Length: 82
Image (cartoon, rainbow, N blue to C red; front, side):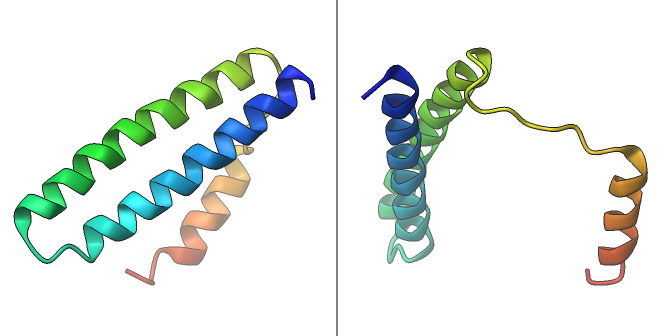
């Protein structure tokens, strides 16, 4: 297993943890429980962001920049939904 594969595994795990904490926050029965889940979620999101940044720095998670025309089209498509 190489470094890229290890980082991919860590990123997938971090994303899964974020999903669990988010659902825990949504389903919380009391404000204290919700605060605990929100705190954990924020920590997990920070970790996920760091892992993503490290992968992007190595070129292991490339992202494309959307052309302005494509951004406009998507905005127009969903403008009337909300």
